[in-house]
Image (cartoon, rainbow, N blue to C red):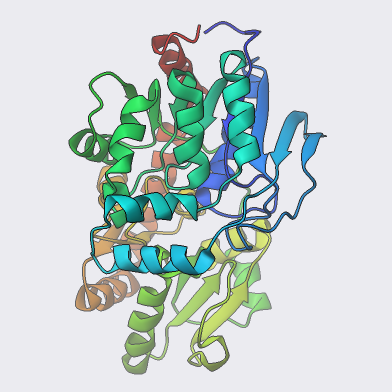
Length: 398
């Protein structure tokens, strides 16, 4: 696709602001920035919602068009929804129950939605290439139907119950192109959906800037001694937060020299009753996070549901070896290819691996170095955007 192309690319995502945390939200901002840097005209289509933690029917921003950081951002009012019913259906999926076709319809109807957004997409279908992300929200499900073959999807797909909803069979097959972040994500989608007529490529994601962390400063400022494990992310079950907290609570009773550092947004039950060896940093600025990563004996990414983990890449840049959930194929595969860490499948392996890393500091440091080398060689935005342009051209948007 040539530079200066006249047809704009519209990034369509449920929430848009610098304060919206999460990997998909960060990726959306980075993709917009990188496409703009390549000479594309980029606009953003989003709702007036604040972020994933806020009420999905509450308008935080004013509907309308504004210029933000050099981008045209169009925000549309949120629809009313039945949050209680959505929660019931989400819990049913989490427990392994298959939803009926009617219940699947309810699930998407009570997700985050904006009829005004869908009307704009349908009215201006020929005027944009629509790039949706991530896959699991109403804005993507209904937005793709409005955009038709003008749609490209960055699914950020996980092997999770929502991915198996029958309605995604039609939606995934309806897009013109699929931008996958990793080989395991690509193969999972190929096995699950009828993608014979879809242009599907592993494009990846990049890391543009990551400052240098000061581990000694962090340890000094927080009075930190001994080995420590760092968790950085949203405090939700799907990200493995409860898992690492439970495992560490029992582990620390046998190995009191260890400290668990928690960094990230969100509230959680039991926050006022944390064990003595757990330090809750809350939401921190990037430099503080990088300092904590540089100070950590090991960075733990316990999520089962990842298509690409920016926070893991950041930890590797800071030289921290990784401990990841063995049940997440994407994370395990990245650790295998990079040589940047180890993985655990249960609580016994969690403990054994931490003790190994404590007893073998030279090997741990080597894993961290190898992780940093992996990021430098595999997460270069110019290479990623070359592949993105190839995808767009293969979709006929050239």
